[in-house]
Amino acid sequence: MPEPSEQPLRIEQRPGERVLALDGELDMADTDTLVEAAAPLAAEPGDLTLDLGGVTFIDSSGLLAILRTADQMADGRLILLRPAEQLRKVFDMVELAAVSPRIVIAD
View: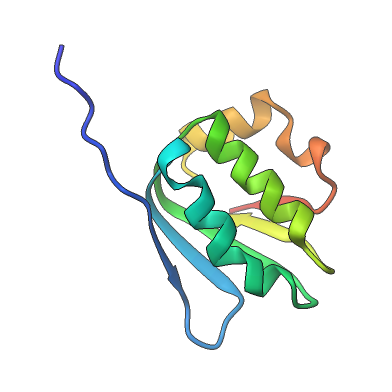
């Protein structure tokens, strides 16, 4: 069976917006990258959006990175925007939105 291709996580901040667009796999290799990229925005008041439309895979380390980011929020919510169906299933299975009241999952 062939190995799945690794897609390093790419993070881009949308100019003038409190949105980080993620593309690739959110796994152990990239959790610190996400937490560090989100930290300056999370420290400011207001909602922060992670556009997950380009995320193709998430593991438990990726979930932890999302929770760590939510915990860093000074004020507001962490909005998880456009997760793929497979990510949404993982979020539902672990009851992610119930674990942190700051997290909102949106289409």
